[in-house]
Image 1 (cartoon, helix red, strand yellow):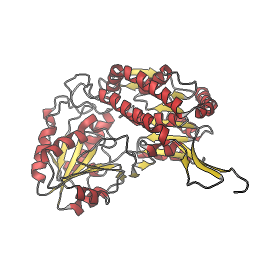
Image 2: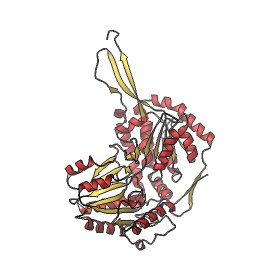
Image 3: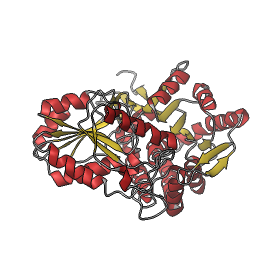
Image 4: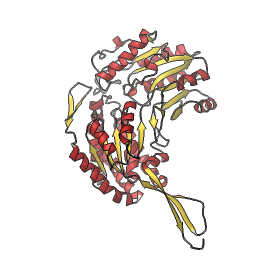
Length: 462
């Protein structure tokens, strides 16, 4: 049995039987059998099914938001935002699908018809995490279906109800049998699915270690994998930044969802001229969070997903303080903070160095380190001094500087005066240990299709 323990109260929230070998084999066979007919349907028809599924999903938005809170601990005041984000991304990809999936014509040549067609891969296995259970999954699920693939969704054991909500929505839309299915299974069974003959592409969001396991499982086959493996995302606050705006935005960017975001801010570099003012204002703003029961609408900071995750951050903070960092937020101001539980007070660390774990290990929790820099060059060097490269941001009034530094920073997305946001019109991608591949935007369809060239001689004399 799969048992999901809620971080809210430490109790089992739901139980589900794990799929056995026979069930998994049936799912794979059903997908393989149904996919060719699905791929032959016009894009507009596939889009209509997906649109109806989005309608059905949004109609259950209140219940879905409550389930998010109980499964992974996000405050109920914030959980409805994921339903809205799901709808935004899904509808955007539905809207652009006809043009993005259209044939690519070459230059005209008398007596010939030549074009490139995007063909579906077959069966796409999506392995989704718990931290944003719908936003991470929708990035691949809907585009894969639009492209003509069958989809199997394996969700985190922390958020199994998210997979079931996907299935309910597509069932309500009348999606043909076998085109979208879910499984609850072990890591070992996931690896066997990846290695199976029927799976043609794997989209995985999770840890670097998990990404390596996916690649290893797929190594015996010539298939592609899309890997979104997290980040240690930096921000650089220049001396000309709008200070109050930068503080407000970067506090939210670091502590929303208890810092459990792949593209959340985990390290901040501030120009020395404004570092003291920025750091004082930042710590004061973080101290205003209300840590507690996430089912309470007044709570603004919920627990980490599990005690082990909170303890990992506690260890990072202790190590940094032991090596000279200053902890600027007093945990005593947060009554719910308690060692041995997932409830963890937010923390801001000053005087940090890159030798401290909190500045190079992905924290995935409510902590951020702040360091001062002397100039733009030092900021770029510090930002690039990481094994990760998902997003990075600059806070400045100078667009030309932002563009110039953006060309130097090793990252998948470069923000100016924004952070911790995913725009479905842009490619979502990372470099280094943040993974490989691309989702969303027109480019997001490329990994989910294969090009097939048509070269037709219409006139034998040509």
